[in-house]
Length: 178
Image 1 (cartoon, rainbow, N blue to C red):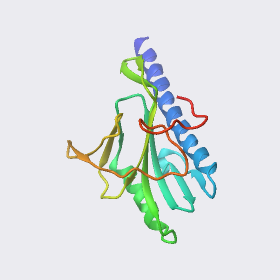
Image 2 (cartoon, helix red, strand yellow):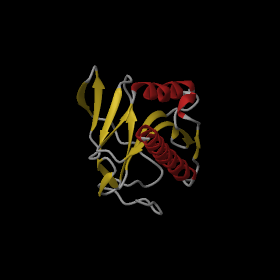
Image 3 (tube, rainbow, N blue to C red):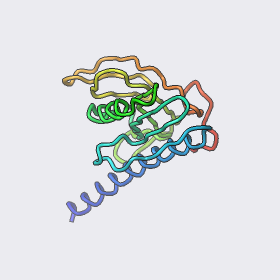
Image 4 (tube, rainbow, N blue to C red):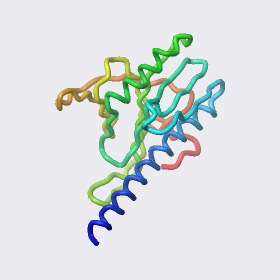
């Protein structure tokens, strides 16, 4: 009986994580679509080999990989960064093409199995401009590359966006929940 409960629990946890990810992607699309001259689209499920979101507008084309969660750090695997980079290379008609990593740290921090504590919601949008490696972003906005199990600090430029975000030094997003 315990194994069945455990399997059901893991299915529920997986579903919750996917729902958070989809909600974050949907929020990004709505924010871009609310900005003048911009159009954004969710591109499908994780198995499709596409970025999570594609946004086009006056500033160019953004291929976006979105991550959200309750942990103190979020990771974008190298293959997902490569997907974004290949899409930016494919659209040469756009002068400015960027691979953007969008991180959302939810307002509850996981402290153990099923236990959480409150914290401020934070969002970071950074531009990836190097060779793809695993990228880690911390709750404080620090970014790291992980190569062969070794973590090293990298400095990624913040992405200029046509909408406000929730960052430690920025104003809250109008109408956002957190």
